[in-house]
Image (cartoon, rainbow over all chains, first blue to last red):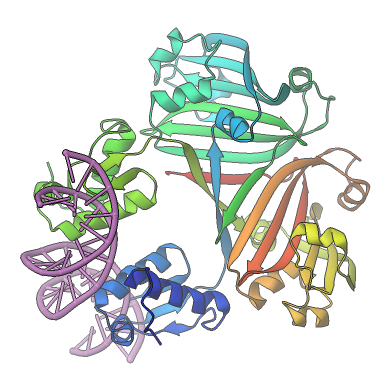
Length: 238
Length: 238
DNA sequence: CAGTGGTCTAGACCACAGC
DNA sequence: CTGTGGTCTAGACCACTGA
């Protein structure tokens, strides 16, 4: 039953075997898996090797483990897919299209009450407010509105952002410890319709992103795309 | 330096320590980490414990490992966030709102050429086409259009789906091995504007999802939400 | 060739939750 | 109380790959 010598490692073969039984339905939700020691005996390996597999499956949410009771196949509650957020320039150029960028406005201004609602702390005094447009193949792809807390990234004050997009610059400047994305739809505002050269109120996709560095909110950005020029992909499994 | 006795396990403390150094920028992208044996000596533990930590960091994409050379902090290329796709009913009820559901149409029809473009194989003969509306607090939340390959899920033919939403039923019926989501914006079509009671052409968020079971496409679904009634959240870090 | 990460073992002790 | 998973160890061998 386990005589084929693949290039796969032992724990990968065990993982594939068990994952296959779960995904195929042979071991349905609620099924009580054999104990680690029994599995180790079945596969002819040590308990540590089985434990490594079970830990991975548990972290992936496929199984649930309870001491003394044992291990059970999870009841599927929600799918979790992986969403890749790539740099706009790279995304455009990977499609073989020409990338271009234009700064619309740049202002260092006092923090307003509205900024608090976005997550900036009250001790933040000034924010750098930027708006710009990203182009793909000569066509406006995305309107960007960004706020940067200059007390967290003081060097941003010295940047003009005329030729360097702030997103790319920030990526190189500081490392990020956490991020939150909100994706939704919105009718094009006056500002957006003008800068993207689309009709007022036409459907747009927006990606709102907040990024933290060591607990401090670094930047808040809203990217607005015409509905026919961008969509977001998230996958799981294969 | 490592004298505090937390409730955390040893490898969790090591992981937090190293992850903190990377995320804080103390160990910047390209930084050459100490070798496993040196780290084991520094932390006063065995190499296996260090290896467990490094394997996790490597899988998370924070570090890159090369034999003979050693381990390096990754250059950030893209953010990957986790997107939770929850059942609509659960999502509504977790907000304390009443959930309701209505079937609009149900038809078992031959597979068309257009279905091939969605990923259904040519040997599929019939698909079950469903459309329905999900309500949240008495208000239309989402218009759903779904296709099910009845050669993969034959028991779907016997379901009326008058009282049971097909998404929830499928979740209980078969296990899923892979899925792909596409999220975008679209102006409300005639059908959507009528069923969601919103203006024609008004901005909507759509989530298109394809789900496979053991390599076979099971179902294709498009969920369309009015822009002001739904958005999608994806996070990473904390 | 030699050093690194990748893997695996055969034990061990512990906390916790059912019995 | 007992069995389970959770963790950790001190070794070992191997494949790969850079020097």
